[in-house]
Length: 199
Image (cartoon, rainbow, N blue to C red):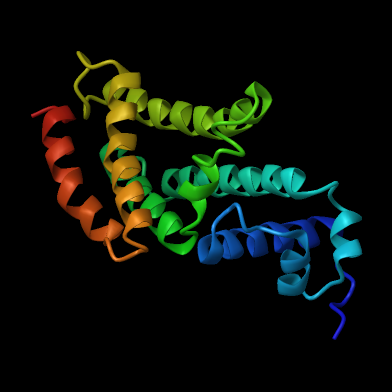
């Protein structure tokens, strides 16, 4: 059965999502355009109308990850103006993102991306850097509001916030999702909060 014709941006997101699902199931090395096409419900030539090959698809996957991270930032900023609450909510959203898309660590730290050319590494970096800057902004706003200690560098705090998620994401990935990222955040965040909040 042929997939109905859809807008280019919708189809590209479908392709990226299918690629993420397949990477989660089989690993990045086994990712094939024919399998992505089957998952989306189109013929392989339809994939090639949008992409030159697997590398271009992985670029779109990276863009999708970056988009989801930025959506998380915007979401928590809409929910509350309290910087500490924003950081906690952001960590919970990040944990849900990694639980929903278990293949994210496989993509970000894959040989094709992380161990590839400088251009490929820059693409991965172009996702992490804006996210880190967004966390730093939240920290700086919290310092200006008197909620977060101003003797701490915003970048250091942002790296510590990311440090709650990244190692845990690797453990969850290695344990095939049996490690509960949400529970980990609930246990780890209060420890970090005590170290950074103004008392």
